[in-house]
Image 1 (cartoon, rainbow, N blue to C red):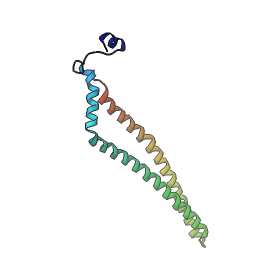
Image 2: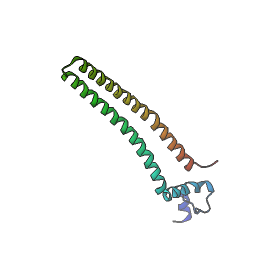
Image 3: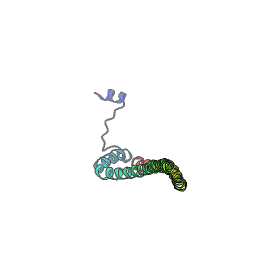
Image 4: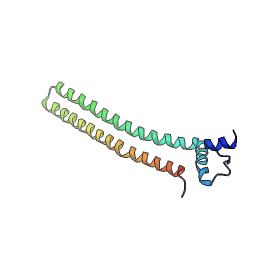
Length: 133
């Protein structure tokens, strides 16, 4: 391709070395990210695994409370005595209340922590990629 065709298509004959320092920042950041991949992927996986683990434990606790509450309500109606059945019914309803509290905790956890974490990740990525003024 001759010089006339190169200029028409927007190509230049400048090399990477001739470019200003600002245009070298992104390739350098990309190379740095690829080279340090084994280091930061472990950190990202640990943070992600911790968040998923906390969320799953909240849900599992809520399911456990719901199953225990339901089984206590069933047991309360099969018990022969009035006072024993009343106590089991009360404890079953308390476990259902704990189920609702874990549901609220899960919604707050996912609604507050996850958007905050995404904003932090975007801010860190912008610091690496955005040109310095």
